Image 1 (spheres, rainbow, N blue to C red):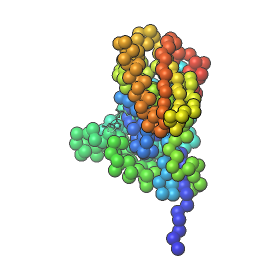
Image 2: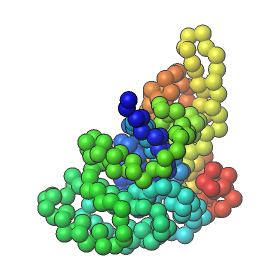
Image 3: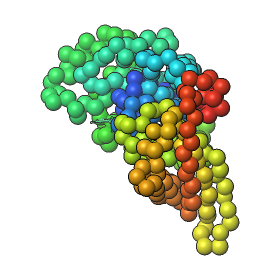
Image 4: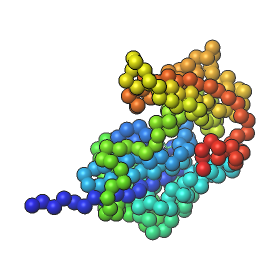
Length: 302
Ligand SMILES: Nc1nc2c(ncn2[C@@H]2O[C@H](COP(=O)(O)OP(=O)(O)OP(=O)(O)O)[C@@H](O)[C@H]2O)c(=O)[nH]1
């Protein structure tokens, strides 16, 4: 008779300063895109859970926004609150830094972590170090900065590195029944994913020109009966920018850029939701919204 191992389930927070690869890591761990990535710093604003069940263990991941220290606007204050909220009630924290670098920004994030919760130091982007031998003295020095439960040099873009992580994390999850089904990957709604997808395309296609204060609000998400398609979803979303010049930038020459944002988002959503999608995009100017607490709340960034 073989004993089946008891079910384990727990929360894992992914923290780190902007652009260290938190979203890339989460997506690779979950195996599907649930959090958006882009080269632009600070594209992750929401607390997103990704779920992955391996063997008897269910790993529930919480992504956190990049820890912003430079500006003090309401938006940034809201982001910082989310980070602090996310690290307080988890079973394990993955503290992500870039291998070979430990900056004051990293130190600030580390200082936020509550004592008593095990922290894994994830030294990401190892592939970007010219010589792996250079990592050894850096790892030794960084190990002294906190009582890390584990130290893992790796690359979130390397499949083998990702699969090695599950057995490492497993022992930190409490023995308890799973919270989600074995195949569930996220508890985010399709409406939420629609907004995130448009936002990703927006930032990808505007490069560094557009400030990160731009956002996307989904105004309509309706399923409609259709004789031609097994499922049809009609989505309307508004891209909110701070200035007229940003609006012109998003729309582009003869509307080309907005059209491309819409086409790319629609194609991706059709794949993600496995249905026909009609997507309508609007661009609106609301100046100063990032400084306005009430508005930040009404856009859903608690
Ligand atoms: N070379 C290399 N690049 C990586 C790796 N992991 C992530 N990146 C890149 O680093 C950039 C930032 O990655 P993200 O996953 O968006 O970073 P993030 O920490 O979630 O960023 P914020 O949302 O700003 O907090 C992207 O261009 C990724 O492709 C890695 O292991 N190696």
